[in-house]
Image (cartoon, rainbow, N blue to C red; front, side):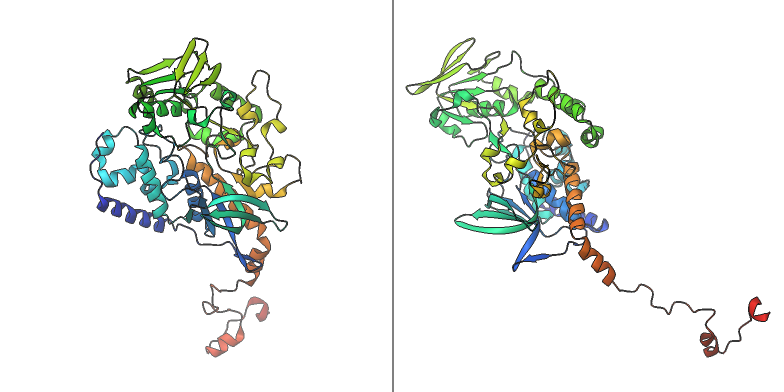
Length: 499
């Protein structure tokens, strides 16, 4: 679809409506968390690591509940948080345009409102799905209109648990290092937030000039006129294959392990508020059963992504073709599958992500203590699933739990609001559909803990509070003689007095 020039006047009107809606709802709530100072340094109540969609809505929910002493840190430049402007390579989002995502129940904060304010309702009606870059524009607008405290180009290199119940965060911004004290820390760090990119063992030792992961920065222009291979049948594999073709790849070979491309999106098919709010209440064996079945069924790539690839005659789909061997020969790669040998110049692995704390140096202190599902849950027969087995076992507020009780109490203040939380909470922390509900659950748990921790201060404030609502001149005591004498009144005796 061709989009007309956006209307800034409409967006200004929408922002005014949002301000009015927030005022009517008395949002955000007034700040209430007592400020802390330790050794002359102010303590931040909540630090959120990651300024993408999950980090923004987590911040917005906390602000909504009156937690204003917070900070969102992201290592990327402003406008490049999350995948949307970096390694996401689809033309449009995969989610339906109507999903309200991070809007927190506020109509004026939805993507639809943002879009219609600029392009009108007629343009919305013919829009298929949200253009990827426009979704990034929406998140930039979201951050601005809610005035969220994001600091860009700051990376968290270390998280240290102090003995006084605080965290010390080691930060780096440019050439400058500094430390920050925090009471609660939220990891809103995306798909690879507890590890990194997954690569099959056959990539070990391969010269980096021959390959990339689908989440890497790739010089697609440099692939023009060359032979390119892509491994995988998921959405990211298809999107990377399409970009390579659009950049002028001479040949594209897509190697797919399965004999067919997945066709049914199982979890979306049962999507409901029941799943959103009920999944966390399932017995553990049912949580495992749901997700093991879903993962093994796999999520199909979007139809438009597959068609984007198949539109090119030089694209070749190889089904039932797991790569058995991959070697470099001179200036090319030789790929071997059960169906033959293929020469290529460059290979892209669309093989997803994995949990591996060894890839997250900032979590080194906590990694030995974090309880994973395989630490306490007996895997049901026939349902072995390494991805689920290595998922973190989380508490009600997305907080990590201890492998050995008492060994690392500060884990209760470190929250996993990213994709690996799915087995514990359902799909509330990594995708658009229920991200507001996930952030609400997270924020309420943090607010509860902050209040409980400060209970002595709040009780002292309760005792000290002395602002009267009634001044004493609103009534007179009918049994007070001095009041009646001053007024020149004669009292009628009570029955007891008359007797």
